[in-house]
Each structure stands twice: as structure tokens, then as C-alpha cells.
Image 1 (cartoon, rainbow, N blue to C red):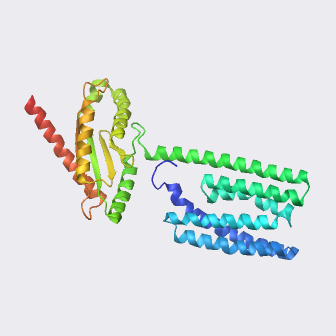
Image 2 (tube, rainbow, N blue to C red; image 1 turned 180 degrees about the vertical axis):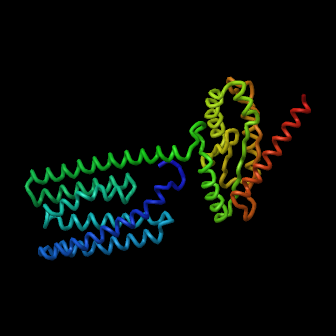
Image 3 (cartoon, rainbow, N blue to C red; image 1 turned 90 degrees about the vertical axis):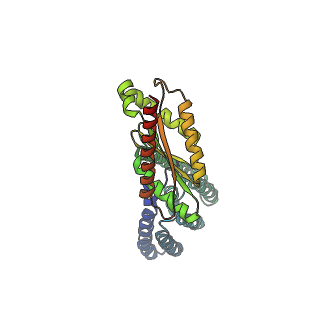
Length: 330
């Protein structure tokens, strides 16, 4: 997955799993009644074991729905379901095989894609081995081939869904002109980093960068030239920051950097480096690019709104100073 932090899909997944697991438990309860009437007592016992597993998983996921720890409970659940089905396969091969046909989709729903693929391959190998010993070779080959095609088609669907989700995340969280993250994602990530910094007692800094002559650049060179310039500008800044730092475009002429685990001294050093490198860079067709840069570090008990206001105030002061110096030089 790309590093789009705490995507909405990830917040929805545990809640969706709680609903699905609860409905599956209810469906199994109705199925047990029908199997009991038909005298399929081993299947009744197997499904009776599955129901508590689903209900426990649903309860655990609901309790830990806002934490990453909810993921681990899916592994024993998938393993238990696959183990029960494979255990009953020699006795009821033609019936249990239809249970196993649901395993690929269920595994991709519960587990990360790579882990679900490994589970499905293991189930396919075990299923083929068991079928070979209890049914004729033609039937075993047909069932194993059908299961393999089902795994392949489910993998393709999961992969395409993953690509679509990544594209939608990138579209929703990035500025389409510059490629930097947008304003909406800035506030979400800043709140998260401030909370993490408070919990771990680490400093969090932000740097603001303003293109001083943004409107003049548009008037002189046209909007198209500025649109082509912005991705280059963002790319240059990305080359100067760390991998854990993030860059955002909040306004046409305003870019901000969020620097986790970075104190005031580190932010000032990076700020001066960015300013120097931007001024040294040749930006065609512009003769030169002038920027105002300011940095602030979070104070104790300071929220995202307060630190942003303090940074903008410092940026405005920096711009006024630059204008005064330019007027004095003239």
C-alpha cells in the first residue's frame, strides 16, 4: 500500500468484518439445523465449532476496531475454518468441496493479499492431496483445477480492487497540479503526528514556504508555465527532506512540510538549506524564484490550529522583512 495514512477504507474494514462475521455465524446456525435433520452429525459438530470462532472474532474486532491489533485474529480464524473443512473432506468430499470454494474470497477479505495467496495455495495443495486418495483421479483433477481457477480469478479481482483503491486515495489526498498532498490531508496528518509526538515525547516541526512572486510569475509567463513549474518545485523539495517527512500544498503559493521527530534546530537547518537550494536552482523560463521560509516547533499542549497560526504569522513577518530589504536595496 502507498503511504496515504489511515485511509477511509482501512477505517471501514473492521466494521465491515464485524457485520460479515455475525451474518456468517447466523447463516451457519440455520445450516446446522438443516444438517441435523439430514443426519450429517459430523458436519453439525464442525459448524458448531465455527460459530463461536466467528462470534469471538467479531467481538474482538469490534472492541479493537480503532487499533491495528484487530488484524491478527483473522489468521487463526482462517486457519481454523480451512482445517475443519480439510478434516471433513475425506468423509464428505462432494459436499465439503463447496465449502472450500468459498475459501479464496474469504481469505482475501480477511487477510492481506500476499498472506491470503499463500493460504489459498496451501489449501489447494492439501485439498488436491486429500481428494486424490478418496475420489477418482478425474474428479480430483477437476475439483483441484476449479479451485485453482477460482483462486486465480479472486486474486485478479483483489489486485484490481487494490489498484483502484490506491488510485482513488492518491486522487483524494494529493494536489493535482503539484503532486504534493492537499489541504485536507494536511490537517489529518498534522493532528496524527502531534498526537504521536505527545505520546512518544518527540518534537514535531512544520516549515512553511511561500512563493513571493507567484502572481507576478503568472502575469509574466502565463498560468501554463507556473503549472509546469510546481511539480519541479515540489520534486526539488522532496529531494531535500527525509523519507518520513511529508509535503503539502495548502494554497496556490503556500507549501508546508510536516517534520516528525524533528526539533527546532533541525527544522531551522533544513529551512535554510531549502532556501539556499531553491535560490541556486535554475528555474526555466523564470529568471529567478524568490521564496519566504519559516519554521516552528510544537510547544507543549499546542494543537494543530495554534501551531499553524504561529507559522503563518512568522511567514507574514518574513515576507514583510523581505519586501523591506528589497525596497531598501532599490
